Image (tube, rainbow, N blue to C red; front, side):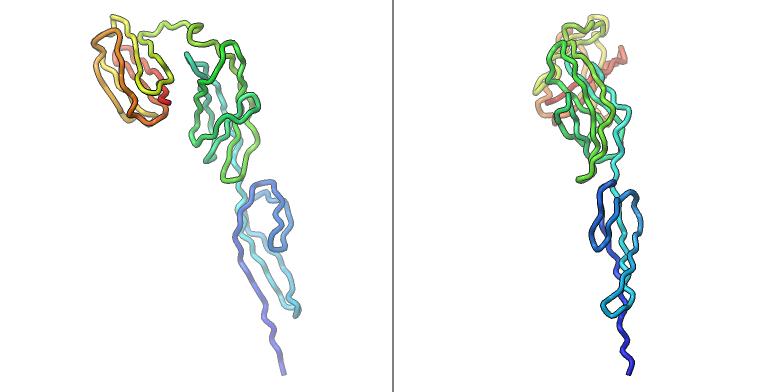
Length: 221
């Protein structure tokens, strides 16, 4: 009289952040790399019981090439990375989260130094902080403006006004979004002009001047 007890084999799937302790399904180890992890046990009858764990280890890369650019009335922060979300810290305080690779900070005070660092995030997994980058904001009135066109207010919530020098009157302008699609266009017929941007979504745009090959960043809030 022969009794045959069954053996068991189970395949499981799970995810974890890199560096965390994985302790589900009888496993216990620090998760470093994505891969197949196997655990051999025995049933109460002494037969083989194998657990196969396909574990995905999520590891957002630390943002690199973080640069703070001082503009006329804001600081633009740019970086590179591989994450879906980025947390922006200014002077060690969280100020914004974005899925883009840039951040516009216009809430600034003259002569104050601002230090920024960026943390990458995929789901609940976070990277280490980037190296900090600092800029002292000097404000619009302290920046020498020798360009052919002045734009104000910038950022704006509805209309944008701009002043052009006489030597480029008659030139054409275009306003494009961040992927190069043209949103608006027209001619610079008078020195002082105004454009209604109230119907545009919030974001970053570029005003391109034909004769000067000048490109001006415009922020719609």
